[in-house]
Amino acid sequence: MSADPTQVLAFETDCHIFDGCGFPAPGLHSFLFEPLWGDADSNLYFNKPMLLALLGSLVVIGFFWAAFRKPKVVPGKLQMVAEAGYDFIRRGVVYETLGRKEGEKYVPLIVSMFFFIWMMNLWSIVPLAQFPVTSIIAYPAVLALIVYVLWVTLTFKRHGFVGAWKNITGYNKDLGPVLPLAMLIEFFSNLLVRPFTHAVRLFANMFAGHTLLVLFTIASWYLLNGIGIAYAGVSFVMTIVMTVFELFIQALQAYVFVLLACTYIQGALAEHH
Image (tube, rainbow, N blue to C red; front, top):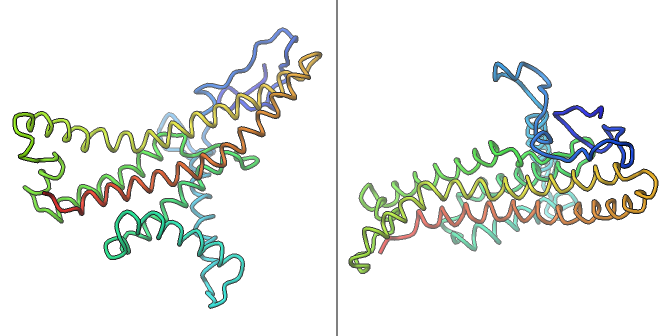
């Protein structure tokens, strides 16, 4: 098999069914990339996911700059699309969760985060890129960390030291004897489990989706031999189906991430009773 072990794609191997070679199944090696610059051993390098993250940021910035650099009262097509996307997140996520008065100041952050995540996810189905950056846990982890730090900061700023700990631990004297146990559970849930699940939810969905896409793509190529051609057609159809499904999941996961972010912010700002 001639495939580079750090990047297995269907067209990178001459292996087919009935040729006496095994199926080049995707795995963790499908998420490893050789450095484009630098040395991996020194931990100072630049690889494909980093390049896609950089390009994705430039795409988002460039899109909104082009749409709003000369805003018009009667918007053109590009401005209309940008306004629709911006307004959807502002009204449908931020205002619905935080209210207009409290939420307005967080609109730039949430809108930026949504479109950045969406773009990172979309790379999965872009020719030549074909990789969702958020399937590398470091990227969702950093995004979740930003939300986590903001949530903790707002909690202590809004409620003070004692009030913040009551908010974090879910203090409610009406719970009676179970109060200590409830506070302990809330403490670990909010401070440890919450940021972990926030990051892993996005990562796991993109990781699984990419694995399935690679699986069916490789299978379509691998089965192109003899009677296997009939099965290759089925696999190719599944590749198309999974691609369409991924389009939905990519947008949904970006939406869920920012919705949860707003929910956490709302919890930090809510008055404790």
